[in-house]
Image 1 (tube, helix red, strand yellow):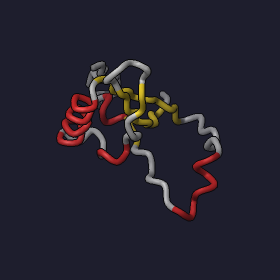
Image 2 (cartoon, one colour):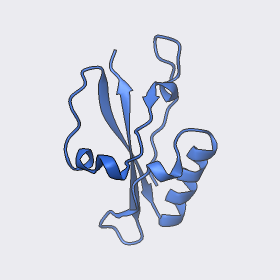
Image 3 (tube, helix red, strand yellow):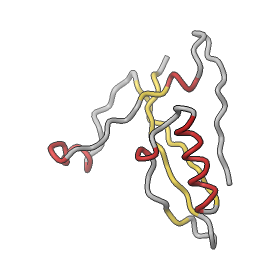
Image 4 (cartoon, one colour):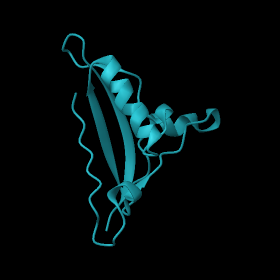
Length: 99
């Protein structure tokens, strides 16, 4: 399993964890925005976090991250195959403010 998460403090004194902005959950009335790339916002940058490992281990990490307030379980992608037997990955997309 691979997980890189380091709550380093930024120059402003806030933690890196606080710099993440939640991605809004999709709804039926905004279906067209899901299939197209969002409008470029020069103040935000997309970041993808991956958790890779056995299905059980990946779920444990995602639920632990939920428990500490990092991300809702539903914000992660469905398990995706990695090409290695018994291994899956799940992706979380977040946006950070660009300084």
